[in-house]
Image 1 (cartoon, rainbow, N blue to C red):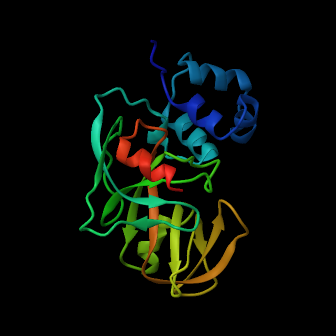
Image 2 (cartoon, rainbow, N blue to C red):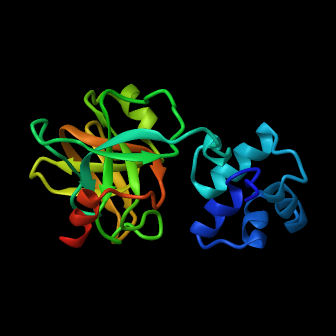
Length: 216
């Protein structure tokens, strides 16, 4: 089977976006998009940054991953209203998947299993998402989270998932939810923000992880 030169087409289709729509977003001709997807035009850094911004991913995500599968460990689950890290005493569940190694963006990364379709079309049931808890809450520390997909837990222990924005004052954030109306000026709990920075779409899951999906 011929390996794709990049992941543009795969991510674009996952976003339910046509080549023409992507071309319009980045100010290019549809033929250029076709040539980039097929490797007929070099995917330069400039093209990668424009396309990644339009598809709401990192430019590194457009690059193919050809190395051998990596063993990762699932330590929690994710839905639109229930992002949850499992207690440390619960065993992590292994998955063998093609996962590029990137520097961690926060303190304690964990992979979460998406347990339903409440985050569709960004994620589907059975996807894996890497999460990073933000343990500090200064404006400087939050800068890395703005416009990124995050889970926010407020002081009443209620959680939402969406794209993080600044609130109207110190200690406040707003969230453009994937499903449901925006949430404005949330006062988040200590360690109440989790950022999602990587995803593995529809990997082959173990029987134990499949069993978790059937419970939801």
